[in-house]
Image (tube, chains in turn orange, green, yellow, blue):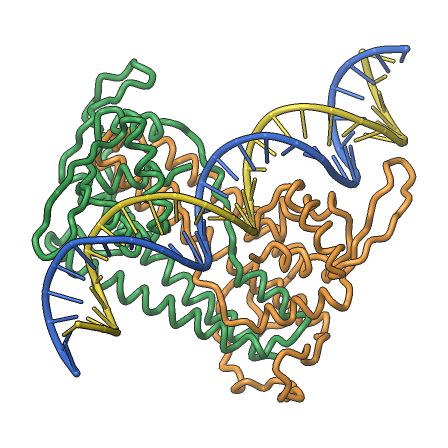
Length: 212
Length: 212
DNA sequence: CCTTGCTATGCAACCAGTTGCATAGCAGGA
DNA sequence: TCCTGCTATGCAACTGGTTGCATAGCAAGG
């Protein structure tokens, strides 16, 4: 399970309440990990019991109080050990693909509108991503073109030569805010690439459907 | 839920036992919908109770008997009505993206091996898909280039002008085996596009990680 | 003969995630 | 004043899916 870890990452990026987390899971993190507020509140409670996060009552004016969570040492350690696990087979569920293959036994042309709807949704999300990229990661140096995998030659693994040796002890344990931004950006580029791929594929699907 | 529908599609393409379905879900359909044999047996039983599928005992020589399922009328109708529902918001879960953003608070360079593993897995799957495409969909006419969304101009929706009007009644209800192949192919092309996108993105991720 | 390994099916317990509902503070407008 | 709507948190019931385990037929090899 990784919802715990997604929450840890989000809280490391910025502490917040369950409600705020729920809204982040509707955007940002939500682009690659969905969760309802129920799920978040429940998991947050368990994480607090386990000492992964600590809560702090925050009085607000003009709105109800909130419980702001931040990551405790145990949580940071848990995240670190998860990061070092080699896991994940990646489970996929594409309803639309099932529908497309199923359409062969029903009415292929009847699926056109549905596919067009999906295409529109992906186009919308792409626009949203690109807007976010333009806002949060404006192009600056000539070396960095936004969302174009420019394949930097990359000096082979010039890591900060961390004190290796220990098995599961959190290594450097705190990277630069530079790294944080860069890694957020590369994940966003992944989202952009995904949406572009989907749009192109759905066009392919539409062209195929139109042949019937 | 769509496991029922994925099973229906698979059984329409070819009747089979729970065991055979489970193996199909390890390949072919499994590329966009995973399921364990447990899940399949359980759902299959429910579908039989609901009259969606019918079972038939088949004695085999050299191996245990099996229960071969095929789709009943009720099942076909259920699939049809599902196909005509506009649903699906598409829920995503990318553990790797969580890990990448989490790496900012741990050891970015330590993630390289993990990302390389994933890249390899995707490269393997791509090779597998391409082999399958070459086997099952050999290039023939000059108009059809495999897995290249050639954007056919497509005469605007030249559907078989089906008797429209009814709301949820199964329309033509039986397309050509031609459509079946074409639609299987376009889904496979989607898988290929996905793997190619992932490989390119993971290269981007690796280049980014190497900058730390 | 016994083990290994593949085919074939299934139960039981558990866990993650969804859905429906409930509550409450507070602001702003009808 | 009452209603709407957003912030903020939560319980309870259910469902889909996973994991662990069990059984059994049959072939092939040591």
